[in-house]
Image 1 (cartoon, rainbow, N blue to C red):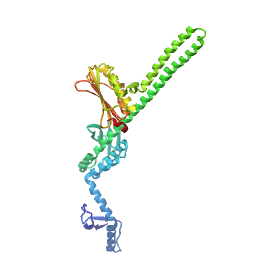
Image 2 (cartoon, rainbow, N blue to C red; image 1 turned 90 degrees about the horizontal axis):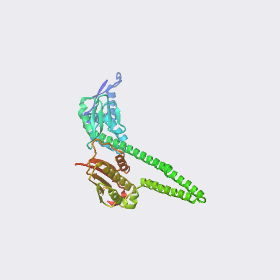
Image 3 (cartoon, rainbow, N blue to C red; image 1 turned 135 degrees about the vertical axis):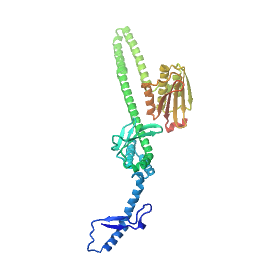
Image 4 (tube, rainbow, N blue to C red; image 1 turned 90 degrees about the vertical axis):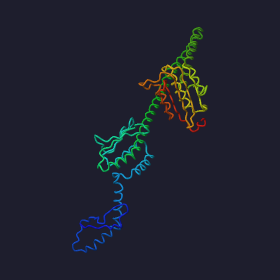
Length: 396
C-alpha cells in the first residue's frame, strides 16, 4: 500500500482535508521498477481526473451530514412542493412518504389518513412502536405521521428540522386524500340517487301511468261496443273514462313536479321561494339580495329543493315561532342561501336523515357546500353556498 499526500491547494473550498490525507493504492508491486516515476505519474493522473470527482463527492457528503444525509430541508421542501403540484392526491402522499423515508434515514415512514382512502401509505417498516406525529391542516387533524427507528442520535436535531420542513407537505397531501375520498363517495351517492330516481320514474310510468292508459283504452272500446245497444251503459263507461283521465293528469303533474318544480317556471326562483315561505306556519321572512332571474336551471332547482327541505324540517320538528330565508349573491361569484329559525335546535345526538343528506348532496353535485348547525340561543341554521358558472356571475 502506498500513501499519496494530497496537496491542500487543490482541495475545494468548504471541505477541510488534512495535507497528510492518504489515498490507499493496493495491488501494486513496485519492486524492480522506478518507484518515483510511477508515483509521480499516478499522482498526476489522480489530480487531473479522479480527484475533482472525489472532492465533489466529499463536499456533497459534508453538506448532507448535518441533516442526517437528507440535504438542506428548505431545498427538500421546495423540490417536493414542485413535484406535488403535478401529482394526484394519492400520488402526492406517496411522494411525501418516500421523501421522508429517504431524508430521515428511518427504517420506515407511514402516513395514516383520518377518514380517507387509502387509510395508510407506508414506505419501509415503521416497526411496532413508531414515533407518532399528528398532521394538522388549518387546525383540523387529518392524519398521523409514523416514523420508525431514525438511526444515530447525532442526527436527531437534523431529522427534526427535516420533519419541520416536510410535515406541512404531508398534512396538505393527507387533506387532499381525504377531500378526494369524500368527493368520490359523494359522487357515488349522487349517481346512486340519480339511478334510483330513474328506476322510480320507470316504475311509475309503467305500473301507474301505463296501466291507467291501458285501462282507458279498454274502456273506450267497451263504450263503442255498448253505445248502439245501451246508451246508459256507454255513458257509465265514459264517466269512468273521465275519472281515469283525471288520475292520469294527476300522475303526470306529480312526475313533472319531481323533475322540476313548476313554480320555478311560473314564478321564478324568488317568487317560488316566497310561495314556499307563505305555506307556514311559522311566519317566514324572505330576504333576497341580488337579481335571481336567469340563473342556470340546475342552480334554481337545487336552491329551491334546499329551501323546501329546510322549511319542511322547521315545520315538522323545530317548534319555532319564526323563520328566516336569506338569499344573497356574493361578490365571490356564488349564491349563499341561509335558512334559520328560533326553535328547539338540533339535538346533540341528532343523526343525518334522508332530508339533510339530500340537501348536502344536492349542493355537492354543483361543487357547493351545505352546513347544518345550531344557532346560539336556540334554533337551527342551514347554510348552503353554491358557486355560479362564469356566465351567470353578472347577477352579482
